[in-house]
Length: 141
Image (tube, rainbow, N blue to C red):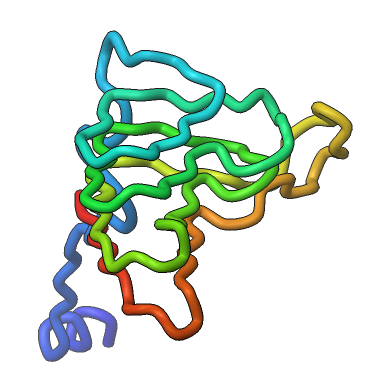
């Protein structure tokens, strides 16, 4: 019976499609490590590791237009990994490219937080003035 079933209904197994990020993502070798990044001028900011050491607040705050943030690893913030807040009144554009933004439950007690707690808020937080024009955010690998 099993042989007849197998002949009538052959089963083909396929490898599972990878889920999530893969390949080279985040900071490259030789990345500059900073504790906080406040971007107030247009430009390209790249190859950074943002280590806030659990200081309160957002790790990257963008208040300028026409900014590209590239090859950046930001993890375990106490606030947001990135806050795009162009003075809450501009219509700027921010590109976040090839960055890793990460928060999650802590494995051990650390910096006043207990194991299992998530000290961070958001990976990315955007803000605009209520009656202002919308800003443009582009995220890509």
